[in-house]
Image 1 (tube, helix red, strand yellow):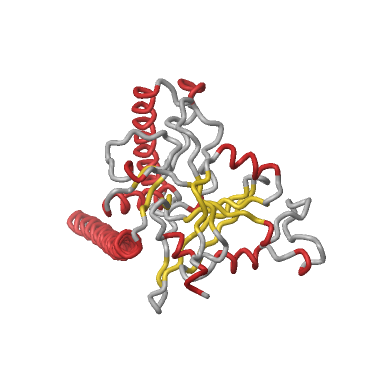
Image 2 (cartoon, rainbow, N blue to C red):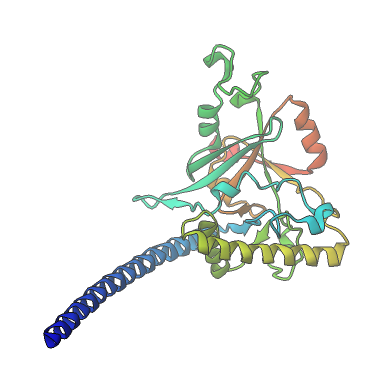
Length: 313
């Protein structure tokens, strides 16, 4: 009887071990499958970023840049309150940072675009703006003329009905002087645009922006947040070493006015443009709004980017 009990106990123990082994094997298979899926997805993303980098920098001559993906170097920043901005000037970009330009089956490219309306503290994000489209096409759709809307614009925040296509002035900011674009050691203000000098830094920024949005899970988000905070801290430190304080800001970026008949590709090929966070950003202001005059007092206008109408006649 004792021998039988021992044998039965060993059999039960072996059955438990076999069950544990099967569970472990299943866990290993799932982990391997997830790892392979992540590797395959990353390979696709690498290919996408390479295509964007080639199209932007080699085919169009676009300069790509980035802004900080975090607004603070700590959770509360009690140690440096007097040096911290109340809100990043790029806060509209942050939810959309890392959204890449897309190429369709006809090999035509579309870019993410941001329309900023400083006169009303509003903005719009356009996920796909085809390169071949004129600004006027999208402006006419978003801001129809008053005679087409019974004298009322569709935006609830436009109480004075100023946002009609023909009433709007369009600008882009010039974030870097041409002589500074290739200076990898340039000290920039933390609230300014940092140039992405190579494909590697472009890929790193894209992956970081994805991770911070939770695409790779909370642990990776925390790791990337720490890395980005360190980067922001180093930027602040270098700026203060050279300029004394974060409040010693660079002059407001000059601007270029854009004729609505320009295509997005025309704008992208202007050498003065830097595209931050893969998002082509325009400032739209009603011509007669007081904010327009104030904007031009603060931002020097370098000229007007417009079609060569002589070639079309």
